[in-house]
Length: 193
Image 1 (spheres, rainbow, N blue to C red):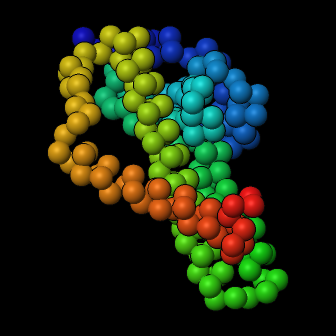
Image 2: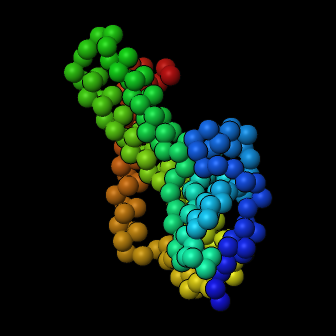
């Protein structure tokens, strides 16, 4: 079954131009209505989900000259791209201001490790949220457009690789928590706190 332009237009409730300002308003208003931009051989579609916040995908439906769907691609919206890179700059600047008061090598190394850990966690979480939202919306789009997909393979939770990963990551996280406790509490004051 061929998917036509009229089928894809059923997805869109609001017509807006795909630019930074419209996406910024869309994020600030927390508008969950399916929105899109319609061109002659291309339709852009986006919908903000509850979990994604500003990190929602924009889907581009490419059409041939007979207005039949030939490709679906996606990308992160402009507001999400900017937040993806500027938020780490904000908390890195807070750490740098703290370092500038009095430079001590030990504190610098500790803050550098904290910055790296926060940055890695931030990038992993936002990427995971984006991928989750993208997959959920693609399932919804495929269902509305009646596009057949392969059956989803159920993921096994307790595989050998996942057990080995947990054996290393859980103790590492526990070590990070202990290090934070011991660095935040002055020497000999653990029981007083």
